[in-house]
Image 1 (cartoon, rainbow, N blue to C red):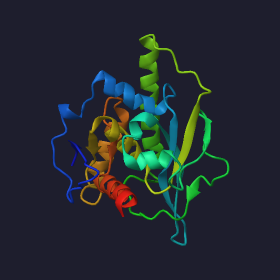
Image 2 (cartoon, helix red, strand yellow):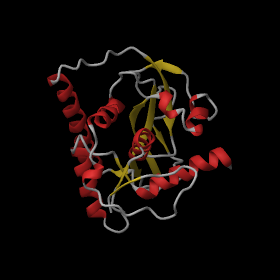
Image 3 (cartoon, rainbow, N blue to C red):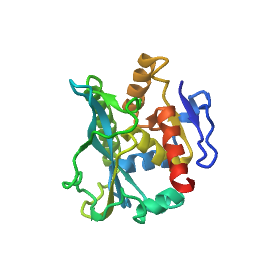
Image 4 (cartoon, one colour):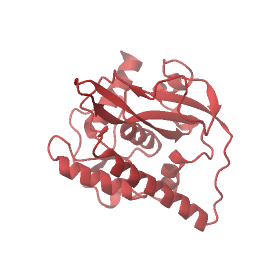
Amino acid sequence: MSASAALTLKTIPRKHPVVDMTASSRKSAVELAMKESMHSVSFLDVKFFAFSRRQFSEDGTVRVDKPQHVLAISSVLREVEYFDKLLSGGFAESNGRTSVDAAFPEDQAPYTDEYDYESDSDLEDDELEPELEEMASQSRRAGKQRDTSSGVQSASYGGQCQRIVIKDAAYHTWRAFVFYLYFKKVNFLPLKSEDPQARVAALTQALDDPEAIPPCSPKSMYRLAEKVIYLLYG
């Protein structure tokens, strides 16, 4: 199932809505620019890192790694109480400020063995991750090429941002969550438990399309929304 739908942080439906994803999933030029801003540095002052890959060791231990970044605008995020607290240092994930082009924090392990949602569909397994990452890279390169052809100059590096590592939500979920906060739109992938091949096809198509709304698992998004509510209201 694919959907372009709205989540409400204070009222979370127990079942994800079924909505036809056709023209409604396409973005305006403004929305496209905002999506591409997640991987550039212009007017952005928050840099999140979230893990994207799941690995299984021989003893059955699950390790989640391969952090990828999502750049964001703090003034937009602070409209949500959870992010206002997060960016103000109210949660353990909050870090100090650093250069906007800084890599993953050197004082932290680029993985976690304590991810509390091992069945997260937004984490890619070893055999799928290289192909999907290449799709995402191609999408980002296409956006940069459009900027160059239209005369838009690349943003200068060296600005300051707040760097935060997210250890309890996958990269695809977090990127979709940030996009939802901007535009109240989300692109739900088919359920992996019902049709894994359809999910892979939809994810690949979305990552290959620079105009697609960032895709995510409906279960993963609802789980994140419920966690946000719990952290705020108990």
